[in-house]
Image (cartoon, rainbow, N blue to C red):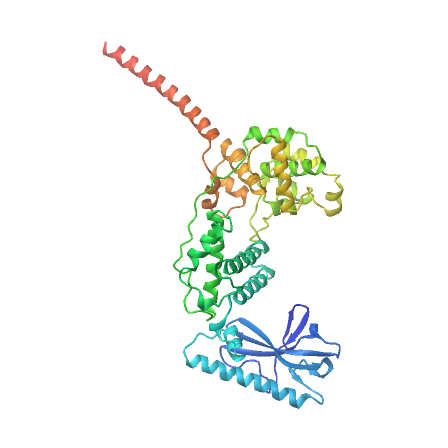
Length: 445
């Protein structure tokens, strides 16, 4: 018996000769009882799972049976209804094999989803955009729950938002709620981009990110056999390097010492200043615990933590005097004590809203967000004070210097410091040359 756990209910592979799980080298079929959907009559639906090359698709067989009359070990029904139900399950398996053979004979790429749809009479060519998005986002969520290193819940949610944007575009452009994938034209990318940047009032870069997500989904849909060509395949997603906001050191110190009129703004101010001195992103700040503060190899206190991204990237930073003051301030804060948190961090949306109030009170005319704190750390705290690119990358939790270079923009402060050093070196060099000239002249005479 092979046992699976999925969503709180148990699934058993078919091991008897009558319902053998392995159908051929590429495909296997599994019948299981969906106990989570047990009705008031005490019966649960029997589901079929198709697995092809490790990818799954599931559907209800339309048959229901009492749990006591289902033999989990052999994957077949028993009792008075057994003959009829087992006959139907055998037919399902035979029909699936026949459908698979037919698709294979046509040289089509047969996936579990394509086989299920064809078996149920749903042609891949009739797949709606909303259905494709739903499947793809569900797949992404499964990968997030499986803790895939390159994915997190924020990424999956951005794809959900992208799907909503695409549906809104159809309503605006075509006055329809949905469209078949096969009906998407080659102009889809240009039309979608225009909608996002005009009606959607999004920046060029944000619009490009939504199109990039859509392009990725359509590439997957093509592999599933839902459309013959990807209408976004030739669309190039280009980005303009944005002006990255950050606080100067003068602005940062002014903010830290400006008195706030209410407690909520004071807390947001302190958390933001903490971010500017540590470079931690919002979710990393939210997840910080007192245990993350330890004495490092140099004998000073550091924050030691893996980044929230889920790729086990270290993001260790030294704690300067101001962040240490902030930590001490909130040691006895009720929220921090009750939830074992280092800082009282609000929800992201509320945090950014309050931060705009803080900036206005401090006389800072900049659109500050949680991420500008990260840029302030990289530029104002690190690069302006001579930190190397590699050390900065380590503290920012970057895997490549290419990412760190995005933050490493040359500033007036850095230029002034470099030029001061250049000037000093130049003065010394001129003195040396002048002295050499005098000595040469003396020898010549």
